[in-house]
Amino acid sequence: MWVLSPMLPTGSQRASDDGAALDNPVHFLSGSGAITIGRPAKKGGTTGKADILIFGEQSVSTVHATITVHNSSAPGIHGGVTIQDSSKYGTYVLHSGEHEEEQRVLAGQDVTLQLFDIIRFGTKCKFMLRQVPLLLCTTGKAATDPVIVEMAASCNASITNVCYKSSYNGNSEVTHCVVEDNDEATAAVLYCLLQGIQLVTPAWLAAVLARKTWPRSLPDVNDYSPKHLLLPQLPQLSSYVRQPQPQQQQQQQVAIDLASWQPQPDNLLAGHYLIMLQDSKVCCGCSTHYVCCTTLLQWAPCWGVVLLLGMQPCGNTT
Image (cartoon, rainbow, N blue to C red; front, side, top):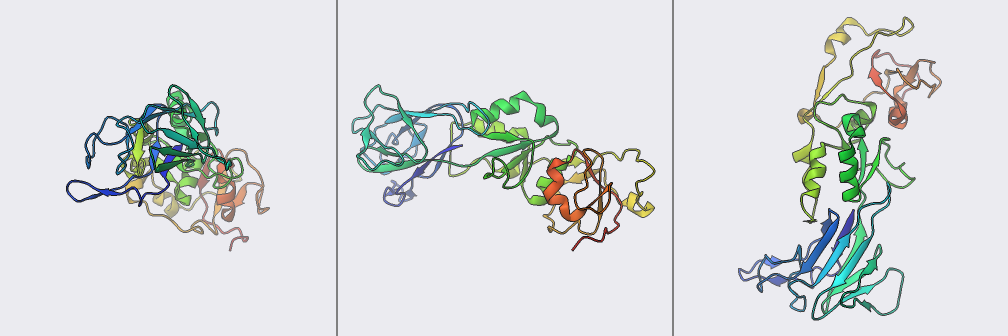
């Protein structure tokens, strides 16, 4: 997602009429389309005609410039950003990697912006164009919902169905797992839950896109977290699979109450067998059908369904 980050936030602070300090925060450019930038309608005010207000700089016009954010054209690729000027004192761009003088944006001209470009509005207020990673793991019903794909493209987010950490394109991390409330907990969801990756419903994406920009932070994910996730149904297993003890069957839960969920230690499942019912592979050499739980965090994203059954240590855990 594209972000406008102030270069000198403290230097551009002024006191409003009631004495409160007004700063120029980071702005998340959450949607595609035209975003206007300008100063408040009144000196010391907090409202104006522009989508993004610049405080404490009188050389900034009421509607000073317009930034246009374009949709992502492909997964993992941010859409382009352009800027137009409509001001008295001008808009200037210093392109990333260049050490020459700033380029003034001429009236009626579209200038393409790049990552880390520095934009000056008026005489001294500068912002840098940055990106923040927004990599969504979709699972369950959300994985095949075209509306979610469209919403992700609109806010320049990437989508994957492989919920690794530090393994998407070699250098990015999954930031959110999109799952419907009361969906069945897939291996990807359980992995995100154990790794502390935030689970959100599609309503969070809709809330992000409800505004063109978000100052300081995106909508609070805690307001859009799923409340319950259903555990997979126990299938009929072949005779070679060791069945749980009766008391363990009684302890099985039908649903996970996420409201009371607490992060678990990394070695929570150490010493237990996990049975892979799909894409079975020998991961740690313990057995053809059993997988050592210490491989959970490494192998879980590859599994179609993962069920904790047995509670018998395999001997290779630490």
